[in-house]
Length: 134
Image 1 (cartoon, one colour):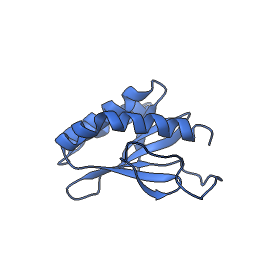
Image 2 (tube, rainbow, N blue to C red; image 1 turned 90 degrees about the horizontal axis):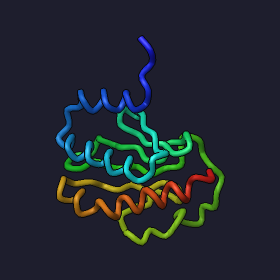
Image 3 (cartoon, rainbow, N blue to C red; image 1 turned 120 degrees about the vertical axis):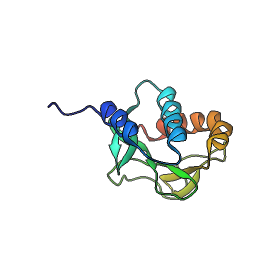
Image 4 (spheres, rainbow, N blue to C red; image 1 turned 90 degrees about the vertical axis):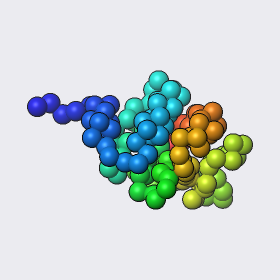
């Protein structure tokens, strides 16, 4: 049997997913993929992960109780960059900065996601722009 593509991995994963936020997870996937047609996806850390230019940039963390997280990062390898602060100023105030090159967004439920949808698209686009040179 041929190896599944990243997209096929995610489709299969979501088909079999039993999670209290499955509907929100499916919607987040649609939102992220809608930002840029160069975004690809696969399974990483036992959850959907979204890549740009072949590097992981946003990975879902489905382990929270009462929420799940979108982890914004710069790929698997540690990158050299200025650690004096966040990669960019987040005018949406959605990002919770964990370090200068890592941030999270928590999704609490569908109404929270609907409220954050436009800002989430903006943050994903900005993250891709700011990390594309890494």
